[in-house]
Every structure is written in structure tokens, then in C-alpha cells.
Image (cartoon, rainbow, N blue to C red):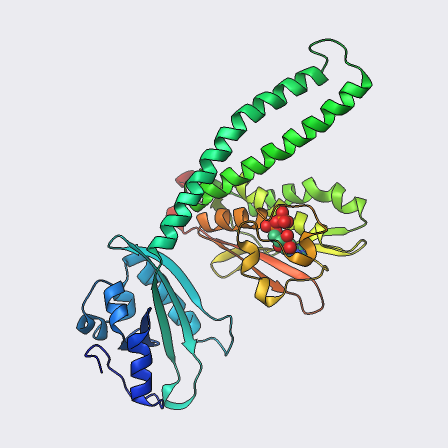
Length: 369
Ligand code: ADP
């Protein structure tokens, strides 16, 4: 038995529990709902760069850096009220003493005396994070280097097609139009790659203003209305109650809503309905887009927000590069919000964006009522 393991009787054979936990390669902390550490292994103390005795006499929130501690405290409050559900967990990644830690908390669903416990796993992901960062930087440099000559190439094609070098025949025009379309497609791909790279490194430039949510939602809807009508899909917008303004980059959020509605249209059957709902829910504004398409399996729901991920059954038939949702997630998270997806009870899926409602002190003076 290691000195760092302190265990009450959870109804599990103590020696088995202790050896599993002590030899696990990841940090393990078991806490009550108030965050008091009831059991921890050496790996947890090492990951948190503190001593085992400090871990065992602290609340988990106080062992983490300040903002993440507050977030985990809120997650504990939320998870302690959650009913038995595989999807009930909280994940956060942060830096501590030069290392990157992934911290995942799950409620332990037991009854009786042991009810109300949480297990938190701490994994050192420094190497993976550095490798991902290097890959992102590489992608970003390549995309940048390719974009410049490609833009020049497209500029020349545009000029020739506009007869700037003299009249051109129909067959040359048709060949150049194909080249122009390919250039446009490649430039869009490179722009998406640059967006993802910037979003992943947190360097996406946001022009934050106080904006009306209805405003960018309606603009996004109007951009796609003709596309919906061409397939006989009814695109509806419903606003419930008064919607507070948010502090946001409206062009970026419009891009997110366009992407989600355009996916909804892409995967919806003809003559179906796509509904956009805007409402306030406690401290957030929610924008949700519901469709009557095939829906998304539970096992795919986290993956579709990863870059280049496309579901095999939809990926082969529909155009796309699997970047839209990765960019959307990064943009929403950089606004302090979140994006989630669930299946509807009947059929189809609902994507929801939540944006925090700013406090009085976050609003510029002239915008206060
Ligand atoms: P893509 O450019 O491929 O659409 P996204 O990142 O926007 O890239 O979406 C990733 C994948 O998620 C899609 O290829 C599709 O498989 C799935 N998906 C997204 N939205 C929906 C939806 N409304 N219904 C069903 N599947 C969807």
C-alpha cells in the first residue's frame, strides 16, 4: 500500500482498489461532491506537482490553476445533479508548470453511502499537444505559402476571362472556367485550413462588439433561403421571448450558423423542414438548428467536431471536407460558448450553439440601457 492512498470503505475490496489505482499510469482522484479528495494516487500528486499529503487534504478545485478550478467546481455542481448517463462528464485541458494536463471528471453512479462521489482522471498530454501544435503550424505555413501563388493564378485567369488580354474563343473560355472553379475551390480549402490552424492555436482574430443574435441568425438564414427553396425545404426561424445582446464577432458567428444550416439542408430529405430556434436559457442565448435528416449516432457525436472527420455513410455522397464543424466549434469556444448536438426524438438532429450573456460590466457604457 502506498502512503498516498487514503481510502474509506466504498464497498469495494480495499486492497484490489488500491493496487489498481496505485499502478494506473494516469492520475486518479476520487472526491465527494464538495471536491474534498477522498482518495488519490501518486500519479495525481505528480501531475499536480505537489505532495501526496497536500492532495489528500485539499479540495480538487484548489489544486488546479484558478480559472480551471472555478470551471471544475461548476462542473462538480452540475454533475452531482445528473442522472445516470454515459455522456455525463466534464473535460478540460490546461497547462501547469510547463506540462499540459487533460482533466476528465465523471460522476460515480452508486447508491447508498457511496452515492455522490466523483472520479477525476489526470493525464499528461504534453507530448501529444506539442505534436499537434507542430502539425498545426506546419499546415498553417503550407496553406499560407500555397495561397499566395494560387491567388495570383486565379487573378490572371479572372483577367483573361474578362477579355483583358483580348477576345477569347468559347473553347478556351470553357477550359479556363474549369481552372477558375478549381482555383476557387482550392482557395476556399486553404482558407478553411488557415481558420482551423488559427482557431486551434487560439490566434483567430475576433472583432468583438455588442451584437444582436437575431441579426446574424437572420442574415445566415437569408444566405441559404434560395438553396432551401430549390429543394422544397421549409426553412423556419422562431424567436422565443426577448433575446439579450451578446458580445461577439458577428461575421464569425454568422459563418457558424451558415455552416450548421447548410449541413442541415445538405443532409435533409427534399420537402422536409429545417427549424432555427433562438431563445434565452438562464445565462446563455441558445441558437439551435433542427433537421429531419438521418441524425447522428451517439458514438459519432464527439467525432464530428474533429477536423477532417466525415461520417462514412454521408461522406461518400455529399460534398465537403469535414472542416466546417471543427471551425465552428473553435469559433464558438473562443466566444466562451459551446456547441453540442443531439438527435431529435422522431428523426434528425439538433445542433445548438450557446453564447454567454455578458454581465453589465462587460458591456460598453454607451450600450447599457
Ligand atoms: P462537411 O464539410 O463534411 O459537411 P462538417 O465538419 O460541417 O464537414 O461536418 C462533418 C460531418 O458531420 C459531415 O460530413 C456529416 O457526416 C456530419 N453531419 C454534419 N451535420 C449533419 C447533419 N445535420 N445531419 C447528419 N450528419 C451531419
